[in-house]
Length: 90
Image (cartoon, rainbow, N blue to C red; front, side, top):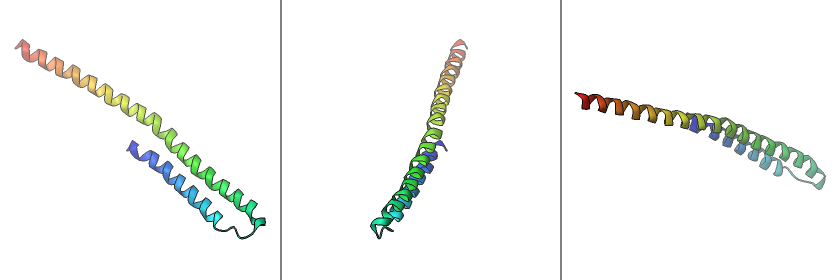
């Protein structure tokens, strides 16, 4: 289901932010701050990358699905018109 794809991106975002929060909880001295900031940055990169991938996969698929639904609607209209014309000609 196409609708689930962004959820995988959001899941990655949550995981990345959780990693960042875990690193924040480990700050116990000023000298550790720079190490923790580096680890936090990795968490944020994971969060944003997974969100980006999820959205980049979702958007083209959503566009294709919308196009298919539109085409099916047109085919249905044409079929209905042909059916109605045939019934009138009887």
